[in-house]
Image (tube, rainbow, N blue to C red):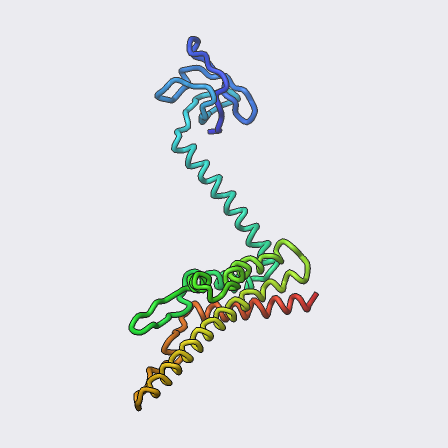
Length: 244
């Protein structure tokens, strides 16, 4: 059977015209296999023999919707395959995977656990950057975060050798955030030393509480994945820059 469309139908005569593969074929109501009367522009399945129509069956809306969905899925798959081929041709598979893992790490994996007294909170890199911006501890972290996401994509659109240096930005972000964590630790140590001096001034052999970096911050999987993938991206970007 072939797919066609009703382009003409006269209910009084019980006859109409259906177009199949650009060819107009006549049919009558005796050849109609639907529960409702034929309607203009209705999609139908047409069976023919020796150039004559033997039956005309309506196509259900469910079938039409399924076919449209399949057509969309096919287009998405084709475009996905094309995009995959273009991306891997530009970056290579290892670099593409490294960037994907970096994105997953900064959004979905715990970057650091911050311990304050008896409480502990686990943050992804994106959450940590948001916190640094909100507290004013780093105004550079926010812009650098978005640059770390976008800069590695630049070589896909611009084929200039300088574009490859964009792959170093994720490593700069990880280093900046690490530096901010170290600065917070140093500030805490200084506060504790001042507290120690205060205790000593009031007599005593009392010791102020002390804390190591590991007691304040505990790095999670997100830190190590982001560190390794960003280092790989930076190495690749510098190598591609120097190679051209």
